[in-house]
Amino acid sequence: MSASAENKVVQEPVETKLSTSYVVRATGVKKIYTMGSEQVHALRGVDFAVKRGEYISIMGPSGSGKSTLFNMIGGLDKPNQGQVYIDEVDIAALNPVELAWLRCHKVGYIFQTYNLIPVATALDNVMLPMIFAGMQQADAQDKAVKLLEKVGLGERILHKPLQMSGGQQQRVAIARALANSPSIVLADEPTANLDKKTGLQIINLLKELNKTEGVSIITATHDHKMLDISDRIAWVRDGRIEKFQKRSDLEIKEGEMHVQ
Amino acid sequence: MKNEHEIMEIESLPLGKIIHITCKGIRIRIWRSLIVVSGIVLAIAFLSYILCSDGFAQNIAKSAGSIAEKVTPEQIQEMKDQRVQTYWMVALAILISFVGIINAMLMSVTERFREIGTMKCLGALDSFVLKMFLIESVIEGLIGALAGVITGILIAYVEGAITYGSGVWTLLPAGWFLGITAFSFVTGVVITIIAALYPAKQAAKMTPVVALRAEL
Image 1: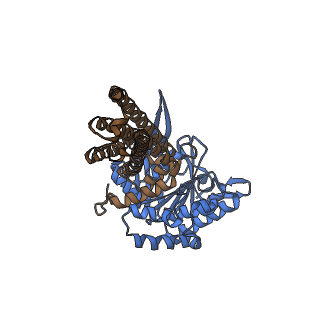
Image 2 (image 1 turned 45 degrees about the horizontal axis):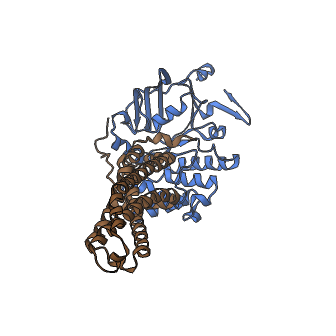
Image 3 (image 1 turned 60 degrees about the vertical axis):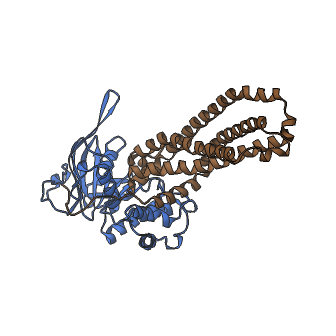
């Protein structure tokens, strides 16, 4: 690849064979919000594809459409135009019950504010999605214990989020996101409420799980530490994907970033 | 294009499980729940107290003995005249309580937007959220109505004992007594459930995206 080609806007070839090697595919996605008499074009035609097992970061300033894109690929919102496929399922064709199924089984969510039940134990919190999935109590408990051990909280399974630090709570949230062995884990600003050291621990944990569990991880983030471990990074601006780069195309120095 | 081999259905959670999750929720938000419950207690206590006192008045006229001696015919007439006024007051108390319950529950739903959104991200159906809030209201209604009936009737009897002497304890025939307690209890539960319908519907309509919002 020539040096000039690397600087061009990279668009993922989406018209490739319809295979299950793409865990998320978005084609020509447009989203318009109507606020009173004004129309806000949040997304102006986005093509986006994530391979199975990839670690993708979506970066962009506020108002760039980053959150809207994020919501689309997480099955939380539907596009006005275009299609979004999660595991080759067109989310626009799903009714509310099927969407709930999708969120339960295919996508795991990690939030900036952890969103745990503060007075239920870590074990209960991790078990909740499994209960929604209809798993038996005993099986759910076993799996929850194993997941909590995987995130390093094996000794705190009966502790409540009230008794935990932010980093520990986010670990519980990560274990919960993996409860039903989803295809994607969607992490919305997972380190925004954490200090630098704890944030790094969480990022490394996510990368580790990405490798060992083979689950695709998609994060929306401002955190540049996240860039280091991502396979690819999508830069969103003004409702479009400006750049979709491989990690190897980025040169990151402390405090600054250069694109080769 | 759906994968035809996957059945994308979520079965409704069994009722027992929903009740279990709801009870845990109440324990978490015990103070908020107590506000709702106390609203019901006050209204139903008032209702049962009035019904009971009224029952005394009705039955005094018929009874003979130690009680009849303590009350003059004029006093009995006065009590009968005030009846309509009293019942208006009770109806008003129930209405105020009703509005208060709706308000408290709506506030609760608004405060819990993140919890509701998160549950939907984890796979909860709209119907689950609806059931959760309705069951919560049923539990609060049962507790509140029971406490209200006991309080109201107790106060009525104590006041009656002070006014009419110990004969008051056997004044009301069993039918009256049961009728008053049952009616007050059922009224309490029913108004709680009806008041909860709108807030519960609002909760069920919430989209999961709200869970992502960083601030209220």
